[in-house]
Length: 250
Image (cartoon, rainbow, N blue to C red; front, top):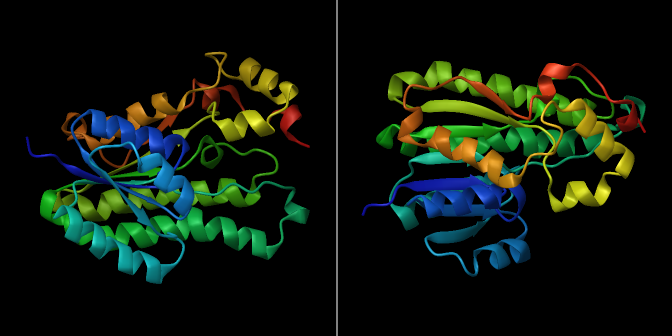
């Protein structure tokens, strides 16, 4: 069997790691990219059909060096999952420019840089791009002026990609996860926040990393061959319920 190749950024943990594992399970080989060397080495140590690449997507020089290495190793690229991201939250008045830039450099600049470097290879395979934004890019919320704005920009960037790259057979779609039960989220969310999310989400629970990965894997696959320019909220219905949660304001 000839395995298709996917590149997943931010693959050392969370949704990125879950996506890589699911794609491998479904017959893909995966270039797993992350800037956290130790965590990525641990994540890939027991995975077949996965090779780690250490790269900070916010640094153009590193991206320019890494993408050719990926293509040399695998010989081509069928799907790109732009998952790498950082989250820094705080009130508008306390969001200094340095914090704003840290968020934008990874969440937006990184998506642009990796996508641009991958497009020539994706043209050859008529491949797929899946950008990971957030429910915070679809609905306003307190404390997320940098994070939410970066993710809203990723949504628009996805549409730009779909409009421009469709003539080459490249599909581009965006997944917006809602609250997900990651180790980090459970470590920082108080019981009050957890209860508030459960009350606000129609499905009354957090999502799992695997559930988000299922949507991403579908959009990478031939089953989504006529789907492009779409923004899919995998959020338990959270976007449909309005704006703001008092528990998240402090």
